[in-house]
Image (cartoon, rainbow, N blue to C red):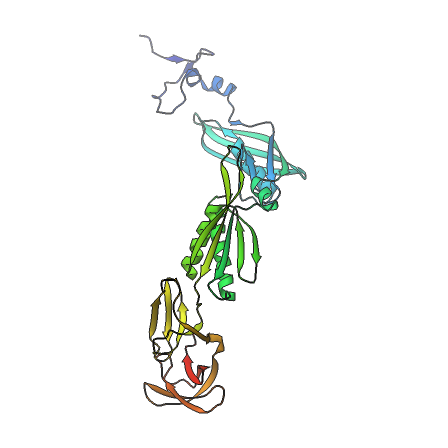
Amino acid sequence: MSESREFCPRCGDAVPERRDPLPGDPAGRDALLCDDCYFEDFELVDAPDRIEVLVCSGCGAVRRGESWRDVGARDYTDVAVDEVAEALGVHVAAEDVQWSVEPEQVDENTVRMHCRFSGVVRGTLRSAAVTVPVKVSRGTCDRCGRIAGGYYAGVIQVRADGRDLTAEERAEALDIAESYVADQEAKGDREAFITEVNETDEGPDVKVSSNRLAENVAARVTTELGGSFESYPTLVTEDGDGNEVYRVTFAVRLPRYAPGEILDPGDGDGPVLVTGVSGRIQGIRLATGEEYTSAFDEGGTPDATRLGTRDDAAETTVVTVEDEHAIQVLDPETYEARTVPNPAFVDDDADTVLAFKHGGDVHLVPRE
């Protein structure tokens, strides 16, 4: 009785019975070889003789193909490790693959990478060692080149309606712009950057890399600080296909009144401390402590008279609380006892309060 056996197509030796191949398993003649013949030509690792990599000296991005990529490398050794990991190939039949790398700094621009690999192939532990020199060259990426050349496509001009911007508004507008651009960079948009910030007497001008970026920043500034914006395109050139290229200025106009101002709305109920201006005036009525809101008029601004600001208020002494509607305090200028409305924001046991004086009248102001 004859035994049915399989034989190696190269050496003719009998080979053990094999299991049925699974989907994705190697197929063809190599799959039929005995282990000795199979491993004669087997290479666990496919490695290039040399790797050349171009790194932007400005931001550390690496050129791969026709584009630049941010790799987050701390130094050129990190770049070399990443490039070797990208370039090396491990045999598809290897399982449980492990590898380590030991960099050797040959000179300022060359790192020799000593790599060791191990993996299980046909139930046998195999290992391999390869050495790959990595040559690092310095260059300038498109993004850094544009920044160095002062390139910009959009401008955000932040101004206020009929007044100067406060220091807080200037700082917050710039923080909104910088935070938004940084978020776009973190999401992988290499074309998002701020080219320049010019501080003028009227307000900051922020130059950014694209019209889309400028429009989004303008929208966020008005959402956070109130007001509105308009766009003014200017034709600057044509691209290689003959398409017109525009540079767009987004003029942000913050509301006429700012948080911290004290206004007289003209409704007969006394002054209001402004606390917000997004979409409408929000504030606190100084006589009562009640919340106040007022929509803008048809021209986009509320009808009110400026009396001063919260910074004009001064600390003064409480003489006595007469009742829930009246309190006696010292006039912050003459130090005479004055009876004024007792607003809800004043604590019953307060020894001192903030007082604002305008036109002979004294008004108490909340501390926060």
